Length: 595
Image 1 (tube, rainbow, N blue to C red):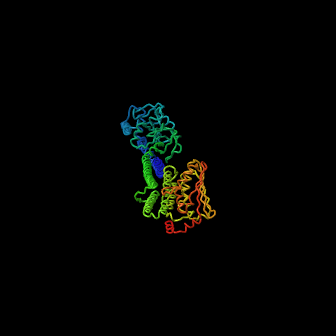
Image 2: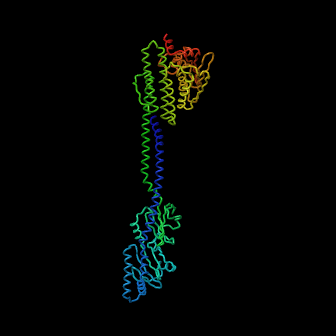
Image 3: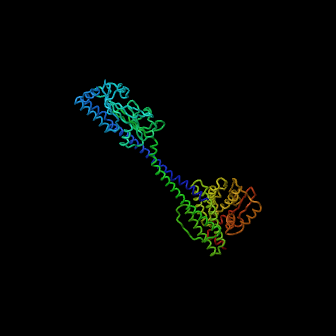
């Protein structure tokens, strides 16, 4: 359960770590892709309207050719006049010209399938000549004739008009007319819109746009293309459209609009590319984006799995080794794995601790005459795995579920490494009270990381006593007992106070806590346990025995407690005895104990 929680927490951390750069790269890629797609569509839209304009020139220039043909051949015009007068007799030359006119018109109809018919009309006649029926009577209701009557005499440019509109308002035909130069008359050509649209589809590759054609009177002529504009809108719905593509809102939807003008035919060409087409182009990049995200998630998953298995492998092995050590089993073989991180460093220190313990156990068998000194060494060696076992369990809990970030675990590991180095030093080497309290504060900091603000500890130590020689780990087991067996079991915030002061050449040590306390029976049992000499005793019993070995029986622990109010642990060290122990060399001390 703890491993799973640790794995998921690590996975969230690594997922964020891996996906942030991936997301940043994707965002930059999408922006670049969007700019490139927009530029491609800009070029494509401009090329489309230009291509349509060019094709329009090539397809609809026949009426100009007809005009040029008549302007350069007055004999054909004279023959046309005689035909429109319905004369019964035509000269041979008129007959030849008539055949030329029919051949020219039929050639236009045959060559250009989208041209439905061509009309030739001369002013002041009641008839006009049709490519389909020959001479036709003029009724006066023809659209082209009405527009021609309203044209100014100076207006010689070609005019395109929509005609024969469908029910949806689109034109079935385009009527193109142009005044004849030098003669009063007009050439009219009717173009089938559907066939002309098919011609455009065959000649020009579409890009998802709809192309709308307007005449110079801003009348919609027809539309062509794949776009999904519901209907051909009025020209007013294209504000700001110019030669350069521009996004405009038409009928409630956004389109990229391009415009081109055909001056010869007086036609405006607008292409409308819907915004969802741009989104569709961007969708081509979605699989690659999803693949990158999936790769980032897979990398985070793999890294989290490897990290979890490695770290928990270290912790479980250390706890197993320390558990064996606490039970007095030192049969594990020497291992020295490469320390590539903080857990590896801890493991190496643990292994070295066991080797030291085995060495001490061997000396117990070989040097029985130093039994008291060996017992003293063993007592401190025993307190080391006990303390480390409890602390490493706490680090495991923090790493598995209690730590908000990895910095807490790293800081706890650093503190533990310092304490481990401190505890493994020679037990006969005296240290100062300042050093002991310094390492005690690191231990308290570790416990604060575990229990939060469940307890508050105060230090009241006289400044001149900080240089007093003491032995290692003298105070830590007492503070640990107050935290774990006093404050923690009470279930509310508690207080611990360490007081060190000097009175009458005696240094007094007092540790008071506001924990659960003990009744008289429990207090009596605890006093019995700590006064039983046993090298395998740990905690208060260990400290009590070492105090007596160093400073005599009078230096042993004294415990007082009241159920529900708290416990106080005290001991006193004579300054004379402290100075005597501090000034002796290790050899003198060993000889003194042996004698």
